[in-house]
Image (cartoon, rainbow, N blue to C red; front, side):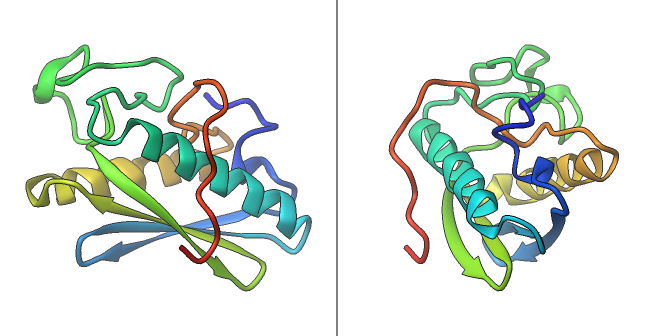
Length: 145
């Protein structure tokens, strides 16, 4: 699980919603509270995802690293194991930011959507699994890029 200080959903008053996109999925984070802090956390999440896109080393949403195929192999449910390779971009929105995840392999698009939808449900339940990479600092994704 992500520490509260890094999780966008842990910003006081934060809301999260998921929207399917043609080539992936988007998560929109909004708050009536500290919008700048929320955006900073979404940018950091995108940077961690992009730092590991294509490496096969995405986190499992529980703070553990998994290589290609994950610890359970590809036979696990769509939301378990590693996140499918995706590129992340950020779009500013009123009162927050949208994290857009584009599948690197069209065959993984539905699995990426299921993975993100599962994590959204966990966030609504008070958990914060979406800080997928528990690595050291990496370069940030910039708003509007």
